[in-house]
Image (cartoon, rainbow over all chains, first blue to last red; front, side):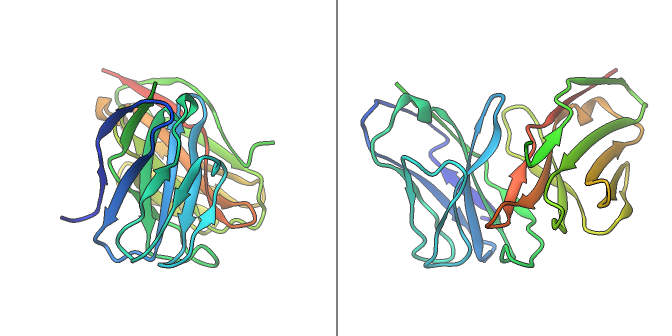
Amino acid sequence: IAGITQAPTSQILAAGRRMTLRCTQDMRHNAMYWYRQDLGLGLRLIHYSNTAGTTGKGEVPDGYSVSRANTDDFPLTLASAVPSQTSVYFCASSDSMVTGGYNEQFFGPGTRLTVL
Amino acid sequence: QKEVEQNSGPLSVPEGAIASLNCTYSDRVSQSFFWYRQYSGKSPELIMSIYSNGDKEDGRFTAQLNKASQYVSLLIRDSQPSDSATYLCAVPAGSARQLTFGSGTQLTVLP
């Protein structure tokens, strides 16, 4: 594979269930990101990781958690899904640290999540 | 004021015309600026990045940056129907200097 993969492609989930969205990149990028995209609200950052072992909160982190055990994987977990988390979720990666770096980000294909 | 603002559109241009997409940003210390293209149902795709004042050309695309006016634009020359997409402007902003996206401008190129 080359680039970023996300799984699943789409999912319908009952409210209250736990769900993990998977993201894997093979570009050895040090930074990874999770965004959600909603009509009229654009792309909003949920969580990010500048390097393996570190994570940070973005604009809309509530209800989501992430981990970065290694360079390649950056899973996003919804501990107890709610209907307002219905969205399209994109994972992205970049080859530069945020501070002082050029933040060219490359996106995965996305996961369409519906919470009923 | 939003950190990154774009003309919401939609913008329609005839095939062969120049499409002009505009973006303003609020963070004066921003040093890098990006344009992404997103087709319906697909993920954003990086098409242009610009770091210095002035113009940067890549094929039919030209990015223009004016840091004094906090303004970045994307021109698409000889627009084609395949250019029909939503174009997103992105700028590092906020205390963590994370990439902040505008809400996008939907472009339709009419055959």
